[in-house]
Image (tube, rainbow, N blue to C red; front, side, top):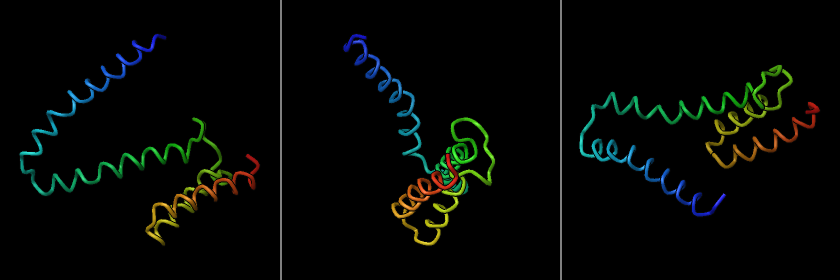
Length: 109
């Protein structure tokens, strides 16, 4: 593909993204929303992240696998426990990566 075409697509998508998001951000930045609605909005990032993580824990590679023999699930549980105990995102991430590598070799996957 031609480099100019690729840049045109990138710039076009950036403009489309900006044009669809900016009006709502500009509008809601000037309006005071009710507290229950703001509290409800605060749960959206955690919900989206939970849905993305759950999909990879229970269906790695797009296939359901036996939960008891899943290094993905066990590493995820150890990561959650590490975060719960330490409240360190970096520490929990490191625990999860190390646990996954060790469990994958243990389960032979």
